[in-house]
Image 1 (cartoon, rainbow over the protein chains, first blue to last red):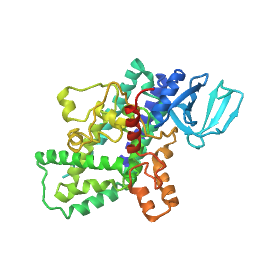
Image 2: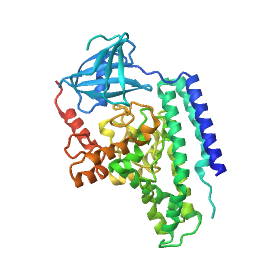
Image 3: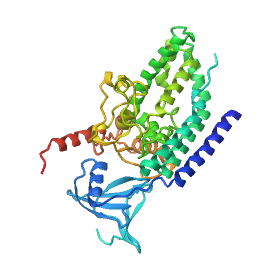
Length: 120
Length: 298
């Protein structure tokens, strides 16, 4: 049992060390380059989604992509990759001082701030 | 015969290789690692170790119990290790294919695919619920044949160690002969990809020949770069959500299912199956993709 506790303790130390190194090296930091990239990402993430136009946040960390069928893709940077959800109209969106906050309707995925965006 | 757990001895090498890959990412492409994702992967790996300790005794007891019914009495000669390793890899293929095609097993395995990154830390993102989902079943045939429990556990550990290094984007392709026989970073990138053409392919552990034999092999393509994760990405770094979200999904679906047959199917049909056909399985995603590819461009 003591060997197992040492193994777990060692693992935790190693985890904290590696995470600290990742932070110190400045790893990560993804963005959505432009509207075209947002549309490509939405189509890649959501099966059958046919993108028509995109609204990109000013900090390139989130986007709304409108589909030809009226559905909407909500994209956000997660880690250094893009994660997305397909939403139906009407969107649950509210204005804030920093931009528009769009709810994904899922607690874990959360709401997404579209910085600098005032209209979809 | 007492055999050590080879994974325990490999852990320092795992840590050093993750460190080396991080430094390479810093030099080449910093987006290949994300501190939060790495922390999540490593914490999930530690959680898996804890889960293994908690249920290891029971798993061992079952294994020794089943071994009493062995057909042959196989000893510890070196060549039996080789045979056991190959057969264990075949049983891994069967397990892994089931882990992607049967939701009950997927609920346990999904944790390993839940990262949208693909690096060596992803390899350590291992299940917490493998015992509960009955993963042990797939190793029982080896014990019934007569391979000693210690040998089966030992070769299983070697198999797991082999699979660590293939979780990387830093290696393009290995030499042709190696790519033909062995599982490689290229083959396994395909397995972790959510691109429609790559879904449910390349289940191999060590030998890619199983996929070629059983029709589940596909080559990585330069014009279709893998996008990693799961069909519906978590969008969250919550450890417990990563470990249990599919189990919660099963529980909700079974509770709400209209018939007993639907309740059963929510557990044993492929991930994405629904009684009213309202959700996507890998088959529907592939079919939609193929129809789109075949359609004339506008």
